[in-house]
Image 1: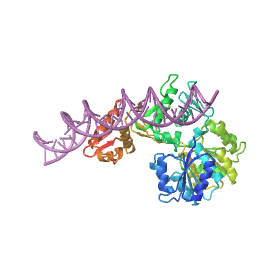
Image 2: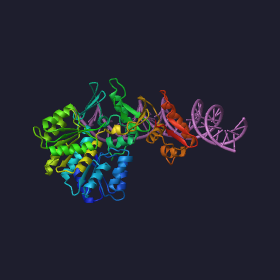
Image 3: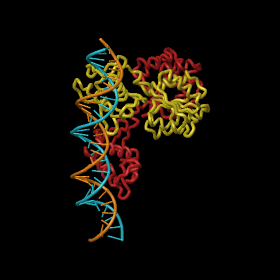
Image 4: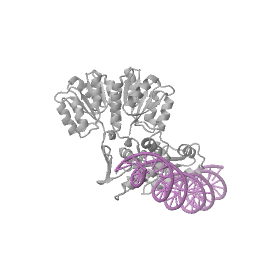
Length: 228
Length: 228
DNA sequence: CGGAATTGTGACGGTTCTGTCACGGAACTG
DNA sequence: CAGTTCCGTGACAGAACCGTCACAATTCCG
């Protein structure tokens, strides 16, 4: 599951450079050219990291940072601020408004990528885990194996990906649209109801050896993996 | 509960300066003068943040970082690396070994404190950020759960949205029209009296396990969630 | 190549949710 | 105090949601 990084940058040369480096490290990447588009794209698909230029047209980067932190749906969105403003007071302002890191232009892409990795490493500790256990369910992502109470459970590829995603975020409710974007991919056009069918298949498989249903349905909201 | 910050630094002047600034911002602070003492102190009391000098006697900072990340009891311990080593390759190495941030000596204490705040701001898991408690009622917006006195309360989608809105503004009175706009949506045409019915349903659910009515009716004005 | 596995979709039906109405008690007002 | 307004509440009908089944098409693999 690739982390999704959103680049909010109006300078084409900079965003192309970032795009190239992020794609090289196998990140999923979106680009927004102004502040308004940035806010829309964050709403449409919550990124795992926002690379945010300070001086964006329409809505400034610092204002976006403030909004994300105070009224956004995802106040913990990691933000790395990019800018040519080198004054220390600007850096302090950026960090105190809510940025996680601050990189001054012109920057070394090598160092920026290291900072991207450091920030993502913190928010996605699960990414580094080869095995995750939630309740009595264990998933081994390297060996592509799933077990419950020590018994192997066979899953098809889609159900495996679905469970993998749930296991990285125990307790969190995901809408059908979110699951389609992240488990199926944002360029796949599938009915939302198909999620229900696959959740049903996953449930059936997990309950095969007896045991409770580990997946909660939240009516009109979506599904979540139970934490306990 | 004050965050506990451990300073791992052998230069007395630097550690005293950091101590002063951290104490000023009301952090709990420990100081270790060499690498061995650092590891011992981490084991004795897990810090919320480690300010880690690269060139420590006995065990180097970079080695401590590596150990914490790979074999430590708390692999997610936030680490800010401090050093006079200004080469970019050192910075990359520090970040890739597991540091969350990297500050070059001589540093501005103001900027370092902003980075400390930024890193500490992130240590709380996202799930906890999205929980609101008012009186004995708790709502978890990410997990879409509501509980009162520790017992789960089932709410339908509309009642959940209504309570969510009230919980964001405890004590504040909202008219029926306001609630229709914000909870139902401004393009939905519903009788104002319908709000009363839903408030009644919310009251009933919240009082299911005993307990007072948490919602105040203000005649001719609207409703408010009690703050106490 | 053929059989098995996987995937997406449509339809059915049971359950839950929603909005409305009517009744009557509580609160307010002149 | 009587009349009016407001709001709590029970009941009901219709709509929405979601679990499940079955099937066809596609993909995978021996």
